[in-house]
Length: 219
Image 1 (cartoon, rainbow, N blue to C red):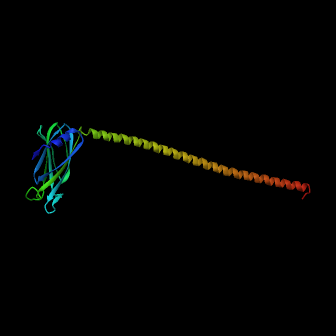
Image 2 (cartoon, rainbow, N blue to C red):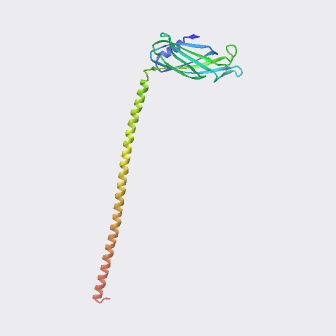
Image 3 (cartoon, rainbow, N blue to C red):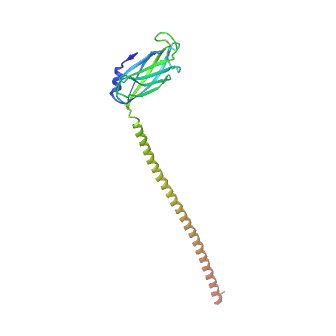
């Protein structure tokens, strides 16, 4: 089945980096295709999810047994740019090598057998398509990595400066502690020296006074 979702195409081409979402219903093994007009180098990313109708539960449920086949073809170049298989939910991506019309197809396989449109073989397919900026070979990613590397270099340089400053401060603290300890030792030393001098002078004065009193026969 091939459809042209005009609203989706308009939205996809209106601006870069726009996300669009839709859901549709497929029978087991049925293929659904979309025509998209894409500029050269644009990156397409799709996220999908499948849910299978369970008659007994009267609702759609996830079935991990379902596999999804996805293809993308460049109609002008007659070239397949994507051929991918995935689980019942996941994502796909491809880059448009040439500008022009591309056909994106999805197919769900492995749903439980049953008959009728609303039987257990019906799969609800939810699809979100993101149209990004033109893929320039990863240059943007390289530039981001270079920018991060430059920032890391700056941070490392600042860290080294901080380490040097901390080392200098520790050395100054050690020098200050050593100087303070030396001053304390000298203060204690001179206190003992002064105490010794005061004791010696007091002893000399007392002895001199005793001799003076004895000479005057006052004692």
